[in-house]
Image (cartoon, one colour):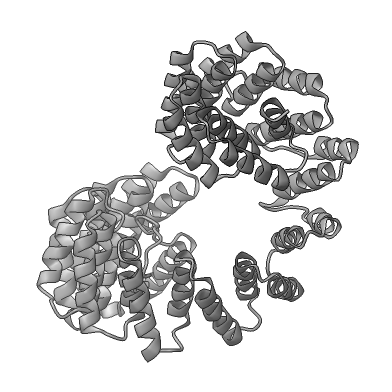
Length: 578
């Protein structure tokens, strides 16, 4: 080959490859990340095929590149593949493989990579590329052989090769088949920790947590200091043996106290187990190691808030705010929550008004509306509500329900009912609107409308426990169709067996049916779970009717003391104790 032409040809090729590098077969986030394979060095001219750069070859090369740039992938791939066959040049074969992949021609890509391998047999990139394309094409047996070749070629670096193989197999659709392949390979390398880690990760992806745990423990036995293996073992233990998972992390940290990623995992695991004080201690240690990290201060603040340490929470939140890196809207939202916990509504509103974007903006607006309504500023609350922007139907419905609540609080029941009806016409199948509109109809004495809406809701959501409960309880209160009413509330209790309000309804149903003992039993459970004045009124009435008048009086008086002015309690007491 003419040396001058060779230099021009090589420059054109390298320029083209630099402009459009070979794309990976599939981009997939993998834990742990696999190091990228090094780019193949350009072979010395003596090792390159001795092919004369004819006008025809140069034309064909330029045709392929121009076709690629103009979006004609099929022509580019065909021309490039033909050029690779004629020249057997590894660089042109690599380019042909790339163009074939871009045009979705896996078979042509495999042919080009094989030419690349034949002309540059020591290239690890060619070997890896062939394995991945074979795998993506579903040719698992052929890919298996290439994996074996990769491991044999780099036997001294088998751990890194296993990382690469795992990365490729992790996106393979048939997880059991991928797992079997990797296990077969790993059995040939029992002392390679990375092989056991890869099998553990694929086993976890396949749902075989027993195998995953066994494999990761073998990896740890080979490399006890490996934080990656420790992290996965603790993760696997978290669901069924959370304390063992904590013990694994704690034991590792006792040997390697500077392992910050493991300490962060430990702190989060403690938090998940509601071990708040220990979790906060770990986050504080992390904060000392990274004093400029606002995330640590923020985490400490939220844990302190959970623990009821309002002063500590406030200090940490303001520290996170002052660092200026943590999302300011998020910090302002939680400062608002903190102010509410301190019963400082004015300060809470100020913080909520500072939330001007982000995931907490809508929630902040809702809290402002709630606090204004709580103060009795009904008009201002509604004005704020009408300024609040909803991004979807769920948020729109939430605003409607809040406005209806505000109207009811101002004794504007007809207006609340009308508002709900108007919005139900726009979203006739929305479960929340159906329920609230039905309840408003019942309060308004429109029992037929109420029953129609509740039955529609049950049809749309047959597991809606409160729809069954509302319909059944309404019938019980009106002493209508008692057997049917009992079926409805008992169905509700099956769906939500721990709901105190539904227990109360079933207990009240037994009272209406004359089963006083069963009624008292359920009403006691409901009252123990939630000492609500309505439940107290019911329990007291049943006890009174059963003859336990002194206990009934005590329950009523205690409940009235805790809920002064409650109309339902006062009414039942006046009825039985005039």
